[in-house]
Length: 137
Image (cartoon, rainbow, N blue to C red; front, side):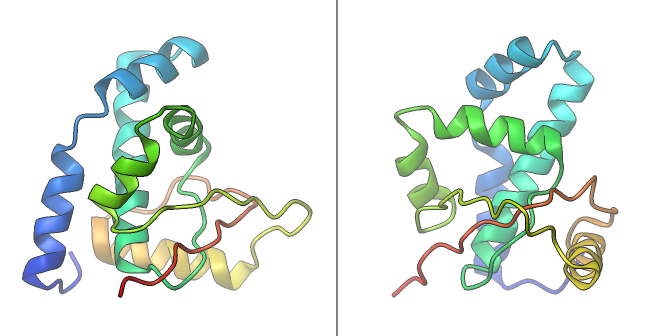
């Protein structure tokens, strides 16, 4: 794993342990996924949230279509804004950029970041980025 501060490690633990069971279960039922696929989607969604925490000032590629499905389910809940503040420290706005696929360099950079942070290649990287949350004060 990449070199992280104590605050980063604490944030990762908080995100990894955060209860998204109901959200993931709703997504699993909507998508007709088995439990293994839902668990993997949750892991990559939480990895994405951690990257949002670390890289608050930069647009990020969504880490896979399944993670994006979990994100959409989460977005539709009344708790999403509060969860963002708790986990990332800012609202994570979902703003797709249709017609603007990520560049080869964006994909390579994101995959390299995943290797460093999670010791794994990123799953399929979606064709849109998110607007970065505002920087923390």
